[in-house]
Amino acid sequence: MYHVCIQEDPMNSPTLKQIPATLIPGDGIGPEVVEATVKVLDALGSPFSWDIQQAGVAGVASAGDPLPAATLTSIRKNKLALKGPLTTPIGEGFRSSNVRLREEFQLYANVRPAVTIVPGRFEDIDIVLVRENIGGFYVAHEYYIPVGDDPRAVAVSTGINTREACKKIARFAFEYAVKNGRKKITVVHKANILKALTGIFLEAAREIAREYEGKVQMNDMIVDACAMQLVLNPWQFDMLLCTNLFGDILSDQMAGLVGGLGMAPGANIGDDCAIFEAVHGSAPDIAGKGIANPISLLLAAGQMLDHVGHQDLALRLRTAITDTLNKDHVATGDLKGKASTREFTEAIIRRLQAA
Image (tube, rainbow, N blue to C red):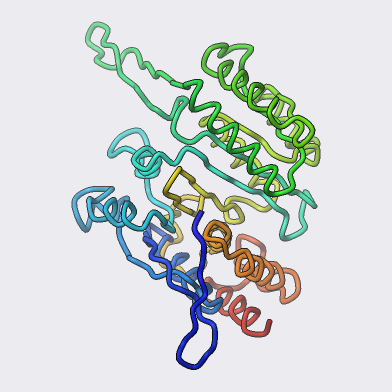
């Protein structure tokens, strides 16, 4: 955990000590939502000093690598980053830069909150999903077995979960619950079928849960049942603890409960490094049109402010977003509004300046 220190400027007014952080604009709409987020943070009195680096398709264009050495060096030095969406080719091409970043910096915990901001089909949703971030099927040890003239006749993928890693993510989830006033964790698994791969995850969670008896409740649910219950009665859930693949799928489903991926932030946390991101894709079809919704990255910036110990600024940011949407009725097209990215950003800044 980082902590923000206050120092006095020559005019005797308190200023925030600058915290070095890596800023990755990303691909597609990434540069647009990153620019909007930086402007809002500046209006908030951002404590971050940015080192701008590239990754994804932009990394290939600038350095011939989707994850350039300079980007890795910057993150390794700063131990803190804010990242726009990165393009990952489907079925071929380079491996996901997002997955590589998680592995490179051992960002074992993915924290994905889903909170209702704009009332819609589902109201009063407040669920936090904690996802194991570097194991499971996302290890992606994949290969083909040739048969006859077909070199790709059989595809094989191997998932890996270790007891140590499962206990570590479970402890993270229970500690998060205690620190944030959460009362119940639902462990999501498929131990009826994937008895070893997800069974060890459930066993480890049960072991850790015993240390928190009287503080945090725990139950467990098979993943397909959980997916159904998220639609039928999402209010029964407080926190979800998931393996890598299940967490990826269910966190997107949770985002659908609160308006879509444009409303969903993500934090990737390791022992000594953290990367915060918009969880939606790079949306190349609308890139450059000025209509992208920056809320996902703005909320991720709020998580980043929480992480560095500045919950006051995070609260102001979230309040400004909520008031802009619900009191000023300014929203981008995906939220049935008419504002451009710039107009929405300016509306949030006005809210911050008026506070």
